[in-house]
View 1: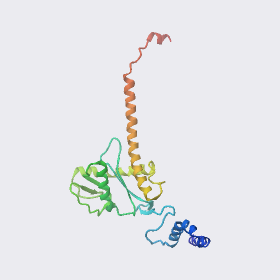
View 2: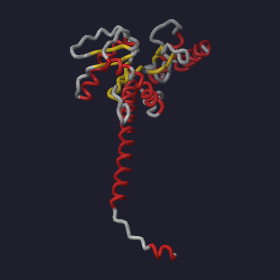
View 3: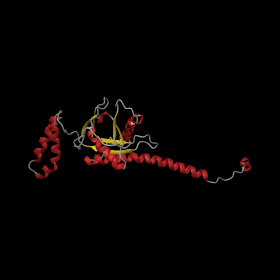
View 4: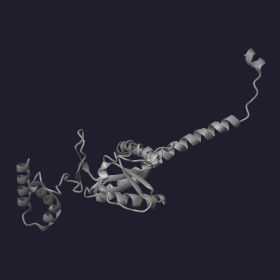
Length: 235
């Protein structure tokens, strides 16, 4: 494949010649092709997708899925068990595949800005170790932390894994796993729309239940016509 790509690049350059118009048209294509041709397995900032140079390799550390290709996204949800479901409080796109601990401060600030309420307790997985965030009235608890004496934190910490099915719904129902919008701006728009769509689906379910309750209440209060038992028996 590398040999074929090299031949194709040389063939295109030979046919372009010194035509400035063709050089402008094929500039981006040839630049990406030469970048793919010259990159090695151990290089950084490699080009993984010809049509989307912003795609990055994200190490998952799981036996089933060791790597994912795309753009890292941070999701924040409510911790309390809600009757309406787990609402998404914040969604951030993290270009450059940064360390999870370095993105925690921005995620907390986004949740506080969108909800208008300061965050008191945060529960994260072990990927956020070393975040070095120290704020007043903010308690950050990492999963599998020993020596937790507060019953409230222990109870709420068991709810941390509730975000996993929310992420699954965002990927499958909200198409977070497959972004059809181009460019880095498309990644940001897709993450925001996916989170908003998840919350709207939860609200739509409540609206349907409320509408069904209103219809049932109205029907129960309608005057019922008297039934003539003799006529009904004769019929």
